[in-house]
Image (cartoon, rainbow, N blue to C red):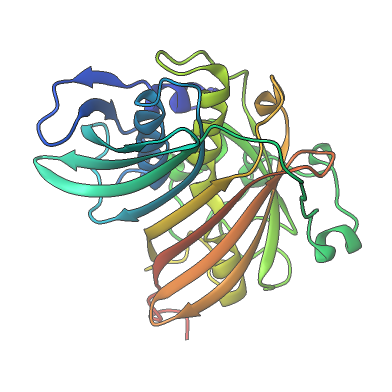
Length: 311
C-alpha cells in the first residue's frame, strides 16, 4: 500500500442496490483494507450516509446524522444497509439506516434532510487557541508519510506505517503534532488537522458531486476525532495494549461546500470534552481555509489502555 490515492474512499461509498429484507430500500458496500482487527468506522458512517442520500430524490440535502456502532465490521466484506423511509415532508425528511453483516446488525443511523429556506446566518470561526497560536498552513507541516518515514517503535508495523502514510485516502497534517508513536507536542485537550484528498475525488455512482463531498466529510472525520482525548491522556496510537473503538457518532452539515472545495485543504479543529471509565468524548469542526464553518462532529469512543510496561 504505497500509492497515495483517494480511491479507497471512492470504493467505500460505491453502493450496489439490493432487494430489501427489512425496510424500504437496501444497498451493499464493502469495507476497505486496514491493518487492524476491525474495519475503519468511517467506512460505516460514510456508507450509511450515502445509502440515506440515495433514498432522497427531491433535492433535499443531508443536514445531520446520529449513529451507534454496535459490533465491529469485518474488513473487506460486504455490509448490507437497509433504509427505512420514516418521513418525507415538504421541508424535512428522515431516514433510518441499519447496517448488517453476517445477518447481525452492527450499525444504526438516523439521518435528517432539509429542503433549505431563507433565514439569518451565523458561523463561529476557528477556536481562539488556534488563531492565537498562529495557525501554520498545511504546506508548513509534514505529511504523515514524511513524519513517519524514519520513525519506528511501539506497536507500529510496516503495514500500519504504510496505512497511516498512504492508505486513508486523505493527506493529514497535525498541529501541534501527530500522536502516532508519541504524543508530539504538549498533552493538551485540543489539536487541529489539515485534511485533503490525495487526488481529486472521483465521481460516485448514485451520488451528485455535492452528496459525494458530504460523504467524504463523513468518511474522513472518524480517523482523528478521538485524538484530542488520546493527546490529553498521553496515549499515542502505537502504545502497546491500546484498544479503541467508536461507540456513537453525531454530525451536522451546516452549509454546502463550494464546487471543487472538497479537493482542497480543510481545517479540522478538535477538542477533548470528557474522558472517564474507559470512554472518551471529542468534538470537531470543519472549516474552509478562509474560516467558513462547514460541519460539526461529536463522537464518543471506547479507550482501553494497558498499563503494563508503562509504569
